[in-house]
Length: 298
Image 1: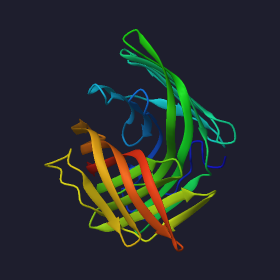
Image 2: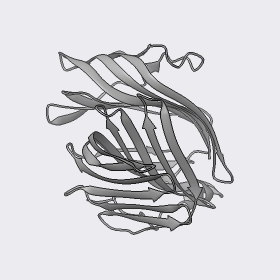
Image 3: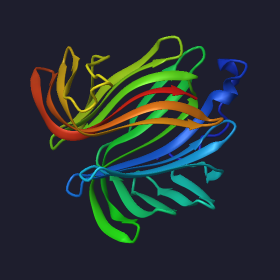
Image 4: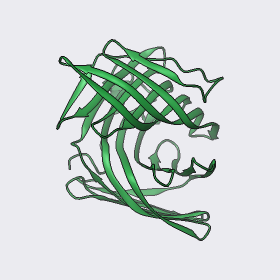
């Protein structure tokens, strides 16, 4: 599909003298298996002056996590498919495939070995923020079928459940604060996002897929989240949306990878219940998902 591969020849000059230093491009695969209580994220990011890969596995039932982050070079080929490959002393990471078929994710490090397949169940969602100093493209597949095998310290398990992936690129803000929820439920999947970039520039949307169609609801939404009480239930509200988040796992990370990024990052895995109201219909939600609450300097 268009824009899955590496985007080259991007014009950064019109967005400021040093805008090329804020140009970033990344591929991100995420999966959640409710039966085995396993959640994972694999990321490959190209930035200035370094590139970066990250792996994360969370066993949220037993409160175990395995994370690895490395500054490293990697190859990403242009074209209408994902073709990303990184290798180093730390191990290897490979993303390959296209939306018309599926994506194959292969990761091997000192701690983990993973091989997953993700296949989209709904069409691509596209979004963009375009201002004087920012030009940022988002392409997301918000509901994927996910399966594969995960090995951690010689313990192997078969994984199956929900998947999500994205390819994003462009001139990024230097600073951002974010509330970002995405969830899966039997009848509806969605994203509720509220970001503030640099000097308060807003980027928000509420996007859902329901009964074979995508739709937006008015945004931003208000996240009644207290970082001092991360395991307490909280509301997410907008005029046509009311959700209650019930955290099942939370973790705070202060991630500093010089010279690429400096992030205060709170991740919350949660059960989500509530409703959205669209064209006269109240759509009930009872699912599972994740919220990112973070402050980024990158």
